[in-house]
Length: 254
Image (tube, rainbow, N blue to C red):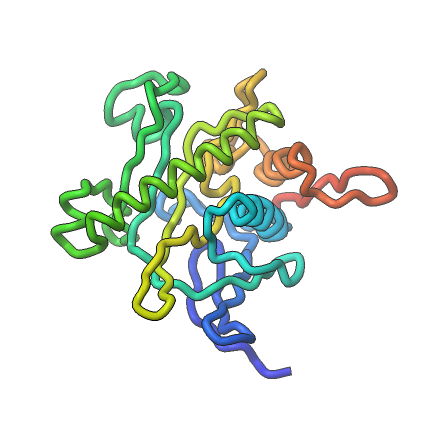
C-alpha cells in the first residue's frame, strides 16, 4: 500500500492527500490542547468521537443546504473532505456570555445575549489568534466585504441548526467556532463550512444541571473529557451500541 502524502498536521487533526482530485483525508488525533498548547494530554479515543460527531453535524448541514467540505466518513478516525482554500479566520458565534467575552466585557458567564453575536479571530498561533474587526479583514485582504456578509449568513444558519439539534437533547449551545473556505466552479467562487464541528469547537452545557460537556472540562480540570464527549454522542444517537448497550467511551491516557 502506497504511503500517503502528508499535507498538514495541526494540534487535533492531520490532513493527507486524498484518493481523488481536489480531495483530502482528514485524520482525527487523540491529543487535547488548551491555553495555546501549554496544556496537553492524550485522550484515548477522542479522535474517534470527534470524527463521528463532526460527520453527524456536517451531514446534517449538507442535508439542509448549508454547504460543507465533508464528503463521507472512511473509517473510525478518517473522513474524505473536499479541498478548499481556507480563509485565515475563526468565525465565533456566541449565544450566551462565556470565556473571553465575559472577561473582556464583564458580562456574567451564562447570561443570555440579546441576539447571537459574531466575532472574527485571525488564525495565527504566534499571535494567539487575536480578535479582529471587519475593517481589519478587508484592509489586510483576508476576505472581501461580500465574503464577510456571506460568512455571517453561513454562521447564523449553522447556529440555528446546531442550537435546535442540541436543544432537542437537553444541551445548551453557548458558543462555537467554525472555519470557512473557498471553492471554485470555474470563475464562480462560493464559501463552505470546513475544518470540523465537535465539542472541541463548541461550548455545550447541560440545560438542567449546567454541567459542561466540551473542552472546558479539560481546560479547567472539571472531570474526564472522554466521558463528556461520550455523553454528547450518546444523547445525539451517534455512539454505536454493543449487545444492546451503549459503548461507554474512551479513557484518559496519563
